[in-house]
Image (cartoon, rainbow, N blue to C red; front, side):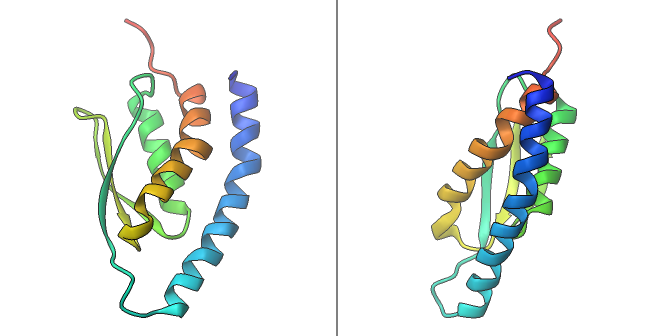
Length: 113
């Protein structure tokens, strides 16, 4: 994926994800009940992603309702995320990888030394 295509992909996908996640988060909160269990999960990011790219990925995650980036560990190449419902954590991580990680990596590839 080239940089222009990655930028266009993020430009089109991010607002849609904000709206969809906003509705899902509102529904989860309004529905209530004891079934919701918030918690922390780790998201390992790709070797090809630079540290600036990891920060950009963390920002996109935080700006999308329902999930917040708590910490970035460049040594372990992981983001620590807070999710509203641990039961849906794997689905949330899969969506992040599918919609954000690839285009962000294309925009912020780590330079080879």
